[in-house]
Image (cartoon, rainbow, N blue to C red):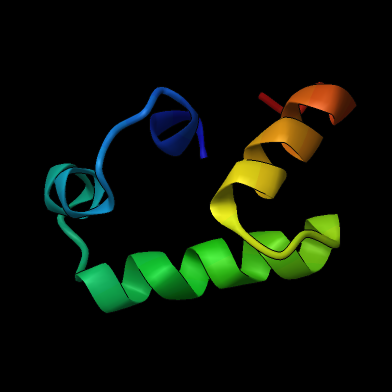
Length: 53
């Protein structure tokens, strides 16, 4: 989540983490579910608010 909050493009994050873009999307989907958010921007804001990142 920190990479996304730093503004990195999802393809860059996936490549750096050596995972597929689909896997990254799955991870981000689970993060959204756990935080109760609907998109990456909301997830970043909520994670920062909670002190997770």
